[in-house]
Image (cartoon, rainbow, N blue to C red; front, top):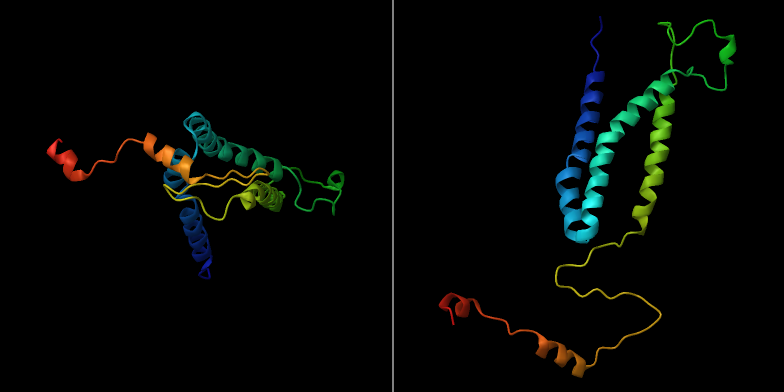
Length: 161
């Protein structure tokens, strides 16, 4: 039996997959929590968690469906085959699931092209584009600043003044 190095490709593929999937739960949840409104964040987190739960189930169903189809779809008439999917010589359409998942991944990635290049930093004012232009005058700026409570220094808070 010749030694095979195919396990290296399987190992490399699983490592890349793990590196890609690992940040989704810890970073994705905190991202949703930070940038979604309180009313919507529970729905978004539930959607991500549900996708993680139902995704593998749908993947197994898709795999079972593709395995029930003959590998040469369109090239061979299935009625002329002398074997069926219960036979050990049967070869299912293993490649069809890859195409379906790839197309689904591509379609679900399209909305991400419309996200902003970078998110605003904390404390940065967001300027929304619109047909109307609002100008904040110095007077209205001073009124807003006067309405704010004064900022306390750390030394004042520590002294209890």
